[in-house]
Length: 395
Ligand code: PMP
Image (cartoon, rainbow, N blue to C red; front, side, top):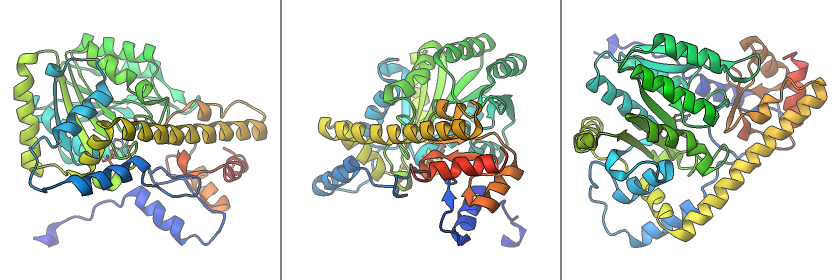
């Protein structure tokens, strides 16, 4: 049977890592893979994570199965982290998933089983995994305009026009909760409100992927759009990831939430989420979830985690500002100011694959072909080198 298998396309980012490793130049800069790195180029284990792991090691007495939804402390504290008190608990069904990716996948599966034939509207561009999972599930995907490569900001008029023209009742609209990947360009609160009005008018269901809470403007600020949507639509799916904001990438820690105003459907929805876990992998991974639950339910650990996350956030913001400043100086114009406006780990420069290739060949700058840069791949010494390479390439 294996002879019938088709070769799958290589992952562009993993390919880029290989090219970077093979490049002998000492001054090369890796802006590819989407993990946070500190000024030394290290992806650290956060202090509170280490402390929580120690506590778990000391106190845990069994590794028996959890429930299908995972550790209730994790589920409850994460609901609180993402949704605050925007909606009452009896409107929320939730399960632990293997990473944000697991939550995304099962949100699509829930959609497919609830509304066969539902189409999923996605931002152009979006995280490539959204597209490949949708394709794998055989779901129809419709892009809406999102990034304006002229301004580096959101093409909001285009977005609204596409949603208004295309949406039918039951369609799902995938939105990034904050820190849009791959562009770094985000909706402001006025725009969130307008999007919600269009979705409600069309009878479409929002799905929010929130994978970088705390990396943009702060933990509360980054959740504001999601909370507004939760308060103001009849139904909402949310896929949350702890990979970035807790730095526990490999532990595979995510949460899928289904928020519905009709509380009489809550238990059935919870049952469906548990069923999806059961069909796909049975019980969700526990270690990362228990670490997060331990941190969020302990005042001291929570405060320390927040402080370290805030340092991470401010560090990336500083690098953005420095990069925008260098480019302003070198170009004598404000045309790169959008890099300072973007939020999160990524920024899309908005240039061509040819110039991305040229920067790689001439200056050893490794960014993804669509010109997405991982800002955390920089440090104060490499920002001027990148700025010069961008100018030298004629971007
Ligand atoms: N959504 C987006 C937009 C992401 O960028 C990521 C991480 N690359 C995820 C979801 C999920 O990540 P993970 O499965 O590692 O939690």
